[in-house]
Length: 98
Image (cartoon, one colour):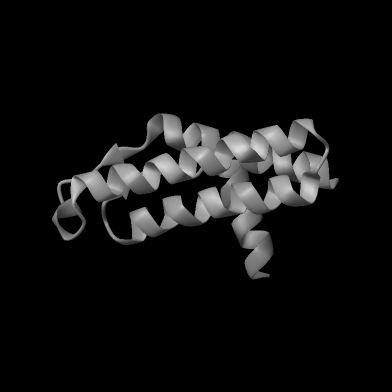
């Protein structure tokens, strides 16, 4: 898989998650305004990733989308949001763990 294909796959996965993400009832650990602030940053990193992909700066694009995914996963680990990564991303996670 080329770097451009990998970047596109991660951008599509993050776009999907941000469109489907839901706050949870357990989010009492983290205040709602803080969750929204982190989601704002995740969206900004995703926008950066798309911008840099268009500019063919694929290493920067991949880094940006990785930050986005990290923020989303952190919110999920804290129990503040719920979502599922699309199947293609789950396959990538398995590959990384191998």
